[in-house]
Image 1 (cartoon, rainbow, N blue to C red):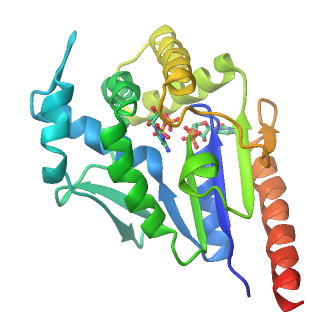
Image 2 (cartoon, rainbow, N blue to C red):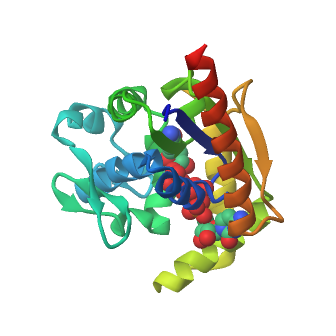
Length: 236
Ligand code: CDP
Ligand code: CDP
């Protein structure tokens, strides 16, 4: 069957990665969490003294970019690929609120974006990929056959992320999580390089009142229809 590229963009905590993972599994596609790559670079900067409260050594980070290796390794038990930073599994370490508080600043740096976008395009060169992020349908894969743009109210998204962090055992308060969600939305949407915006040919999905199953079924149907349509076009 013809393989397509599925780009899922949108605001923080809209359920992009949850649906993307499940979709990739159902279609037998590769899932790539592009946000995890920006988070891994941020973790590197934090671990190497390049980011501290009120101090961010941007030039230092740019000069060390070639020392940062971000990769993915498929975990059979989990059913998705986990992210590695210089050979170390950082899948859990990159999900803290602290990393979330710095990641959007790191993602404004064009040199960081250029390096990660190149790698993302390489992951998707054979199609059969579901990638989620902020600029997948606009910059990474502007030719993607299916583009989705996910949105939900900030309060709903913050509550979802808060529940997730609490479940992990992280000591966070709802107001800090809400502030982080709103601040990242703002930085991500207003940065100069590849700001978060809905591609003209994207389908908007507001999942404020959708369960995970409803959102998955809806997106699976869109994907199957697009795969069939692309397959038919290719045969003619
Ligand atoms: O899952 P969550 O919505 O918290 O964010 P993420 O997908 O893990 O992405 C973390 C941050 O990385 C975003 O807030 C953006 O600043 C940045 N990012 C980006 O700039 N471009 C992407 N393609 C993906 C993430
Ligand atoms: O990748 P992104 O930041 O867009 O979101 P996510 O990590 O997939 O989802 C954030 C949290 O919201 C997860 O705990 C999801 O289970 C939850 N969620 C939900 O409860 N209902 C939805 N319709 C979407 C997400």
